[in-house]
Length: 131
Image (cartoon, rainbow, N blue to C red; front, side, top):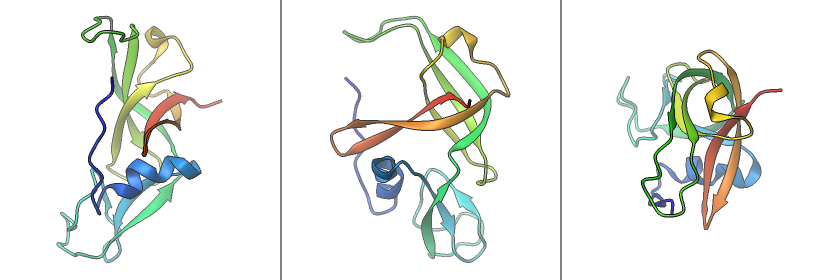
């Protein structure tokens, strides 16, 4: 039911890092700027020296939404999607499904940690409450 992203040279580390339990974020090797979504050129200094690095996989909820509408057959509702400010990657926010808690209990500022769900060759990040 979930559409799979096309793997490209710039995004493969992000979509496959979950295989080893790592949230991989692109960084500029020249100016150290964190880049998400991944790109071939740094939007800050225009360098082409982009590398993927594992980040801690924790952060704070910046925003979230709870979906109560079943807009596709077989979709489990309700579910929450959270936009999380990543620790160790200033300015980067990752949006993903929240798991391991009641969707209506998500709060702004709540500390989350990444987990992954595997579908074919893709490891989708998910957020769960940090213990």
